[in-house]
Image 1: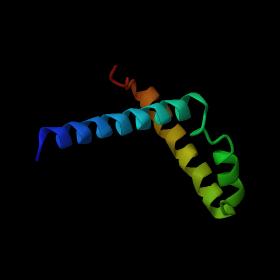
Image 2: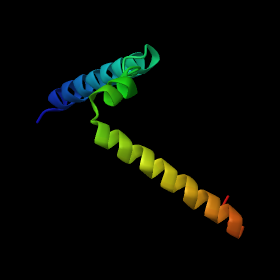
Image 3: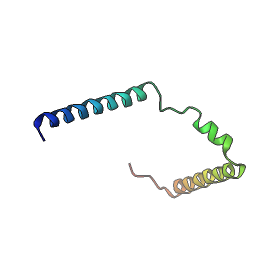
Image 4: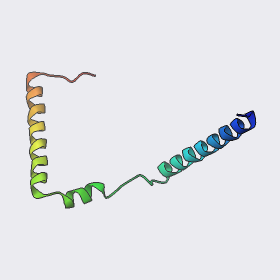
Amino acid sequence: MSSWIIAMMLGASILLGGFGLWALLWGIRTGQFDDKNKFIDGALQDSEEALHDAIMMEEKKKKIVQKRKEKGYRPPD
């Protein structure tokens, strides 16, 4: 291949990569990836059994933490 074709391909890839990076940063800054209703929609569509299971898991987690505190366990820093 000639060096002219390689330079064109390199320039095009840098230009497209820069545009992609700019689009990603613009999307992050303007909140395009934020889903404010994610958890509300999930709770509305979950079955009652799934919500009950989630509550039971939270209670188990609290009991485990309480037992560890009673035994003097400290999590690593």
